[in-house]
Amino acid sequence: MNEWNEDQHAAWHAAWKAWVDDVCSVEEAITVFAFEHGRQIRQVDADVKAVACRPGPTA
Image (cartoon, rainbow, N blue to C red; front, side, top):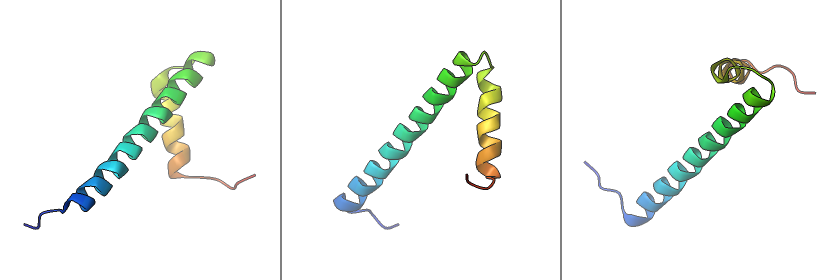
C-alpha cells in the first residue's frame, strides 16, 4: 500500500474540509428556506436533490 506524503495528505485534508464546509452551508440554507416557507426540511432537501440530478435550462 502506498503511503501519502505530507503534501498529498494536506491537499486531501484541505479538499475534504472544503467539501464538508460546503455541505454544511447547503444544509443550513435548506433549513432556513424550509423554515421561512413553512415547509418540511426533508421535502425541501428532496426537491433540491431532484433538481440537482436533472437540471433544466438556465435562464
